[in-house]
Image (tube, rainbow, N blue to C red; front, top):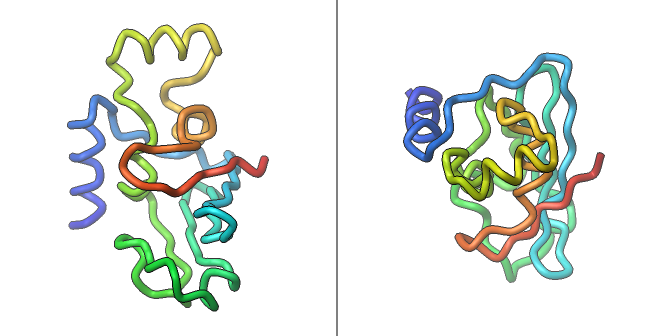
Length: 131
């Protein structure tokens, strides 16, 4: 049910649901200030997230709502809303121009996240591509 809801929400945000390629790999580091919060990766068509040891041992920053359990390895066929909101609606003319100018593949979620996902007005976390 949660996976279906993610698919619906991604379409409502001006994005069609994008199923990751089984061959594509991506790695990201999520930071908050000087704290390495967690690692997001894409392997064999599945997204993975887990917190770093540094984050698990600090007490100043609360866990992310989508990832409440500090010691859990999260896995999903779809990118979680916390990260999806970092990719702007693809139907916006300015976004379309940027996609064309940078020769981005609008069906490649990892590529879009690499390009647009560093910051978000929704939260103070920074997402840094590692590949």
